[in-house]
Image (cartoon, rainbow, N blue to C red):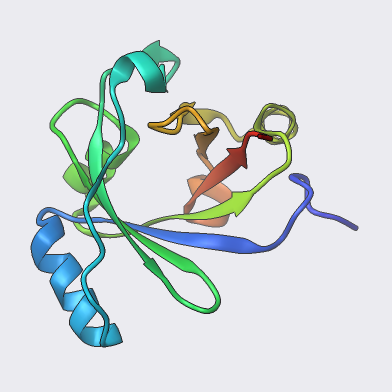
Length: 153
């Protein structure tokens, strides 16, 4: 039996936070590394994001920590309704999602929707080099799954 998205390798663990700089510094101290730079999710015209099926201008700032086994993403959302803001408002800071790199996000989304897991939010990376989709698997899997696709160059 194989995964419905074609992989079972978790590539990222994402947390939502209120204070990216403070939390980032704490992670850097914990890992004994320099705090990574802050990244912006991208301009709405590039990202072309949707949230719950509607266009959105939601954005966030992020820091990425690379470990030997998985990337840790810290996310501080803006106040615009989004999958990140909803989680932060309803559950507070903490573990938000696990992510999988897929060959085709569109195919993985179709497969997941066929199993009853709808898209919560999706869009392009800030530099348009790939796409992401957050899938609502909270009922069955107790966590949000993110699909990541890097476009071929």
